[in-house]
Image 1 (tube, rainbow, N blue to C red):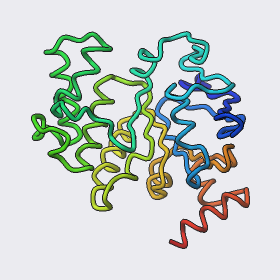
Image 2 (tube, rainbow, N blue to C red; image 1 turned 45 degrees about the vertical axis):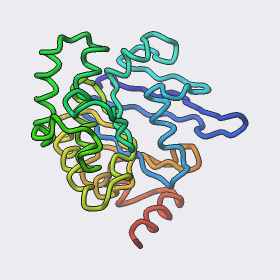
Image 3 (spheres, rainbow, N blue to C red; image 1 turned 180 degrees about the vertical axis):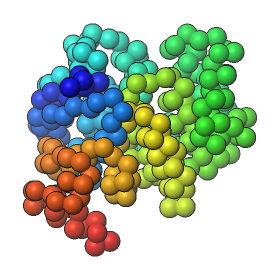
Image 4 (cartoon, rainbow, N blue to C red; image 1 turned 180 degrees about the horizontal axis):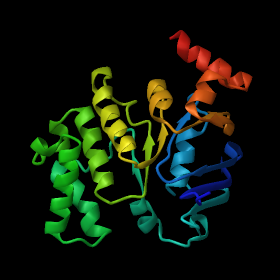
Length: 246
């Protein structure tokens, strides 16, 4: 079998005496769409932040393409260009236009020329349907449009893996669909994605693997068919039953 692009080995994270993550183990293979589901407070977003090195794991290893990232084998900036992140709150630069937001990282981190960065940014903004808004500032566009710009900005860095931290939870309901449709297209195009989400239909229909977290541990994982169709653990059954009742 091919080697995983990303291996999470015995990852734990504590803040003081409060253990948020405990002994997390899973692999991500090229082209996988892995959805991480679970109750609020189960450690999902902290896990993603550890994988992106926005939080330093207390123990355990993150292996990216055979290199142990937690041992400092690669600078965090270089690593984050390869393992990009799309945030719940967009994190766009308010003083830059849509186009400038998508060019900045390419110029600063990838050392591209302005012309190269502009061409690449325009390509991905067009892909997410934001080409007409290149001169707008973030305050002039909707939440759904901001999130699509954030996705284009991440894609412009040519990442090998994209992490999504609840990318639709800050959006009005009518804007959720436009972001999910962009993510579905990325999945269909073969982008390797790790998605923390409350969108169960996305997790069910688009994922190649679903990970259910509960109280800081991976309680159960499997294909969408296995996890949604025949969950083994009572906690998983209870969580899914609560979702279905809504």
